[in-house]
Length: 129
Image (cartoon, rainbow, N blue to C red; front, side):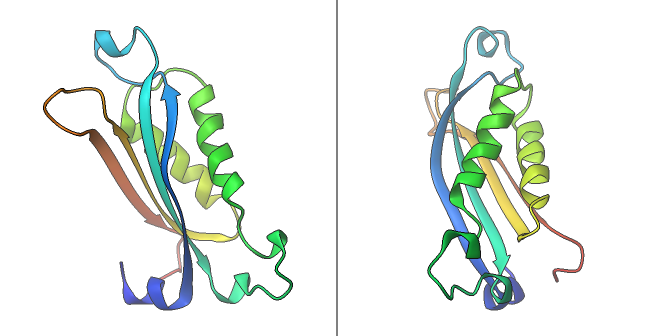
């Protein structure tokens, strides 16, 4: 990660969020939902998230991330993990407090000879750098 993001932003993360999703282009993937694991990193401005009163409204809430993922998965079948990552990213960056984000998805049950197959994307709002 760039020094600017690390020096001027707080990184929030959600690791290993497991959902059952209808995702995939192969016939065997279209028969039933499959396990999908999602990791999200959010970068929020330190200046905008100074905690003064130890209150949730002073920061970006983790529930927001979970809701974004759950809402997208609930919309129906997704062909590609790239599509899912892009859709999640768009919704995360729409939040005024989020300056940049990284989203990764992985399907752990596709191939018996590897831990998972997945996709990762990073994006920042214009002007963050």
